[in-house]
Image 1 (cartoon, one colour):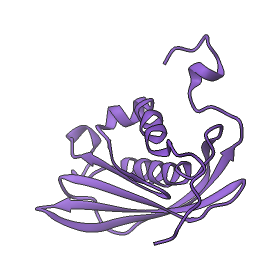
Image 2 (image 1 turned 180 degrees about the vertical axis):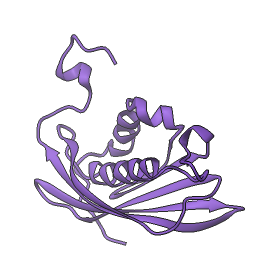
Image 3 (image 1 turned 120 degrees about the vertical axis):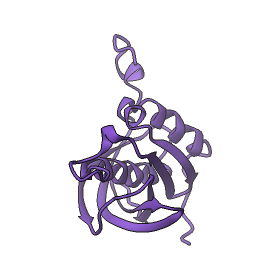
Image 4 (image 1 turned 135 degrees about the horizontal axis):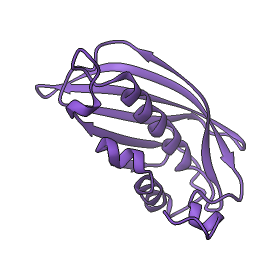
Length: 159
């Protein structure tokens, strides 16, 4: 495991507050299940509303939680005044996401001053067994001196 420089002692609570503000994560039923320096885990239980035509989790759900896991793993290492934004990501879907739960585990590969590279492995759990169904490699930008809370950036916005 890599030893990362922690720039915000309150990183875990800050990540949890930010995650809670994402309405789309609530819509998906996603939960932030682990937060550590340079690492997060997000889970989504299966719901037929999240399925594609074969009854598997839709690839958009897989990509969404992979992006969030990579982004929030990056966010854990940012300064208290900074926020994160996805620059790009590549998703490899390797197996059908046929199961009861999705788990995305994001890990920072290389933190940088402006750009951080992270990966996320997404597993589908079926009958208690985890199977790797996707891997994401992404680049995430540090937005210096920028809050990720819309109400803080613009008081006229209510979230």
